[in-house]
Structures are given as C-alpha cells and as structure tokens.
Length: 307
Image: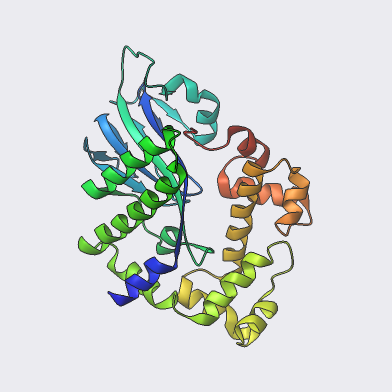
C-alpha cells in the first residue's frame, strides 16, 4: 500500500471543465476520445459505452482514460440511428446536446454530468494513460458526490470556489484509485506502475523530455541523461513504461500541441516548431493521424462537450 501512497502523492491533478448535458436525439459517436480523462455520470436515460456497448446504469459513472478511443451511444439505437465520427459531431454538437438547465426539451434520451481533468505523475506522465486500461463502469458514491460538488462550485461565483474545485478534484481522483484497488481492477497494470514510477533515472528522463520538446531528443541524448548506454536506453525505457522512448516523445509533443492550440493564438507553423517539428506539413500529418482531425479544426472545435 505504501507504493500506491507514493504514486498518489506524486500526482498533479488539474480540473479542466465540467457540465450538465441533455441529449435530445439518439445517436452513436463511434470514436469518442478526450486528450484528458473524463468521467460521465448518467442521471437518467440510456448510454452504452465501449466496443462491447456495455450498458451504463442510471446513477452509475463511466471512467474514460485520456486518449482512449471509446464508442458512446446515447438513447435507444438501431441500424437507422445516426452514426457519427468525432469530427462530424464537432459540427453538429448543437443538434444533439443541450447544456442549459432552463431549456425545455420535448424528448431527452440521456441526461448526464461530465467532468474532464488531468492527472499526471511528476507533472509529466498521464497516469491513467500509462496504465493502458479501457473505459470502465464506476459505481462509487464518493466519486459521484465529488463530481456534483465540482459542478456546483464551478457554476457559482462564490469566494474560494476555484480552491474548492481543486480540492474536490483531488479527492475525486483519490476515490477513483481507491475504487480500482478495492475492486482489484487492473491489478497487473497498477503493480507495474507502482515500481517504475519510483525509478529516479526514469523520472529524470520524463522531466528532461518535457523541458526539451522543441529540440532534438535522440536516444543518444536520452542515454546521457539516464546514464545508460545508447544501445540499452530504448530497452530500458520500454521495459519500465511499455512504450519506446520515441513514441512517448511524440505523444508528449502532440499533447503539448493541443495545449498550445487551445490556450494561444500561435500559428500552426509556430506550434509545430515549438513541439519539435521543423517541417509543418509533417507535423500536420502526424497530428491528424493521432487525433483524427487537422490541427486547425481542433482549434476551432476545441473539445467535445465544451462548457
């Protein structure tokens, strides 16, 4: 248990957004994916999730890890129901979703609450993505209560609300991890992460990569940082993380690109360079390959289910 306490202490948790959403028409979103973690609580109606279209019970939640493609279906669906991609949905969101509690709808097929948040180890590694786990149902009243508190505080301009939201988001993440441990979910993945997150050389590599995304990050350079041979550094990194270092670096660069698209007015060319891509066309190709939409459309659409 001490290992898990160390992991929890190392986590940097950040609230990003939340909302209450009503779905007016049944449809299926075949490739839903967020760049950060999301939890959806179904208050009323019908939601199916995952490749097997598991039914989410009313009052229960589904946890969707960052960058985990997860099909979502809202309402009673059949072969005639609209099948949308994430890109298509970005242009039709207002046809299906309503976020105003005051707006009357003649038909509501699903009513849910959603919160999106970041969870990183040592402010570098996306914890739940590193676990490589699928979306899973989450029946936990403590998690639900934390989410409802987050919604209330985020929507009211009371003194100290940002601090309360941060505290409640921290508590929510702890309760999710407790739920995973108590239900003995993903035992192997949790055990693996509890060991490699303690390796000081790996942590040093994580920090070096994050601080040098705009420059060259060859295996030779990484070997010098970790003080291991160039021939061994790739195997060392993959043994501990399950991913080779260059793939990890590209993931970090793309994640940083998304952040710049959402928070700055930098040109696509400048963002590519800031993320270590000298060739803008290549950057754009890699971005679309990873996220399914061009960088420019990502900026316009922001994310699914915006506040």
